[in-house]
Length: 81
Image 1 (cartoon, rainbow, N blue to C red):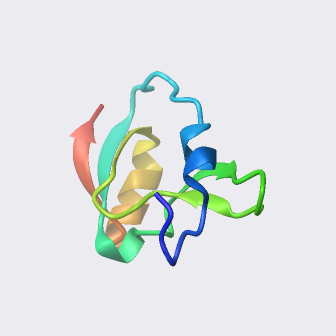
Image 2: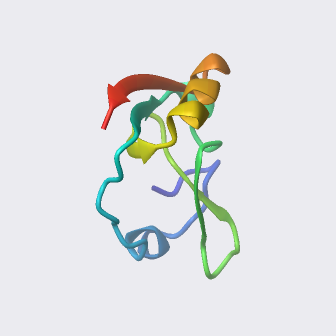
Image 3: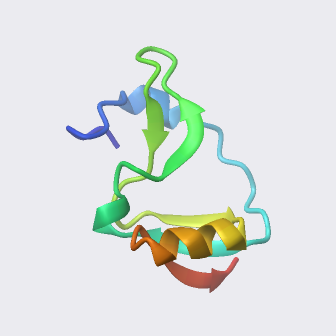
């Protein structure tokens, strides 16, 4: 969703295809990680990185990466997807 920290257009975010979940870790983005955890995709108009907002649950993440993000206080690991 577009916010002051993430000025991405809603149409660009809606255009991101939803891939089927890949086996891996599930985590919830904490307030400290909002706008920092990104999808790897970019807004075609502004070129800005598409990021996840606070409270978003991400599935299929690499367990090692999820653990590192949790150690930094950016996400809360919820378990395996």
